[in-house]
Image 1 (tube, one colour):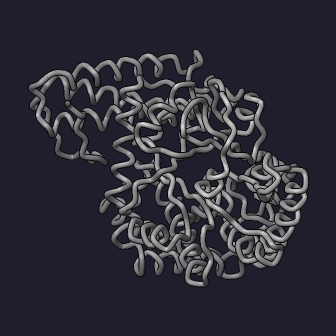
Image 2 (image 1 turned 30 degrees about the horizontal axis):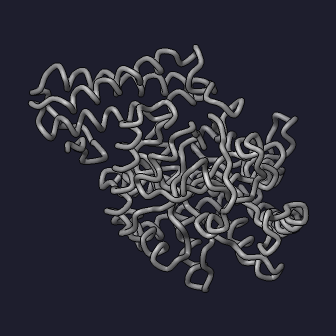
Image 3 (image 1 turned 90 degrees about the vertical axis):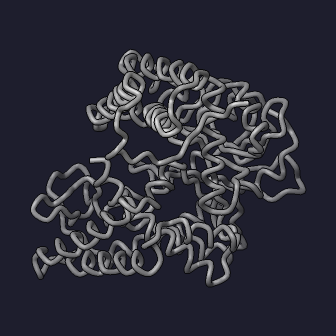
Length: 453
């Protein structure tokens, strides 16, 4: 399941989105977005195994389009989409996504946001484990892209007071918080603030503007003409229906022309809504222009919302006509002067940590605590080979991912999430109980060594 999801996201989102950003860059657009790519995702986008199987998956996508009935309105769309994705892969991605991403960074088209190795929920980490995961993540970014990020995407927008010292020590300058976290700390969204008594800057996203793009209920992705993500034709393994009337179980065929027109219209409407939001978003400093901070998952564009890349491209093209410009999170953070002191927070349910700490995931909480103790114990001892130490650390980082508890708490492929966490936990025990345990067949994404001073 996880592998299939990766190839879908790669083919439907990352290939066309990075290509769209490259095309916009060639046309002179700059500072279009701050793009967060976690180290574990970067490793997947570059790994030879993933690239080989992605090409196979793209070929299979092409073959499946041939089976769509000839008169179906979505047939030509799927055929052209599959052919275009395969062409983009062969032209620019056959050696991984990093060369494309580095070019976008070098040309100042985007700011890259780094992060800890495998998307762990940092407030639940021992500070030493947190520092290790983030330090290694930043170094991985440097190796892949020739840039060490000074901004990060904090997994789940999760924060616990005191974490700013880890960020400061590692040269992290800015990150994003959820709107509610900033408001509860007596700040306002869309404004940069110094975090507690540090030089680190936080900015709160604008939930109203973000929901226009993100929410299936209140935003654009759930509108009738768009491709229905959840309705998969079992015969072809493809999405062939439009969202339509969500109260009606019967689905109408997807019409690509109508969907593209809707994306263009929604882009223009979005900018109109942005100008309205800006009128009520008063900067703390009167000499600064209004700012609206929008935060969404990258895979929304193209994967979950198939027309999202068309929408995004048109928004970027239209903004100058309305006297608006895009800025990166780093540019926005430069305006910070006042400080705020947020409490423990996330952008999950309840805006706290309940999704990752409830009784429903108690077994994962216990396993994660035990694994952190194992890391700190093992790395303090000698005798484990460098290869086995790296393997243990890789398994530990993968186990500590926030995704497993999230999937269980939200009942979204819950069995898969629990099995993955348990598999990594058991693999650590195997490696520690038998120093001769063979490593062949595993694909550790990183070469890791615990820092010893």
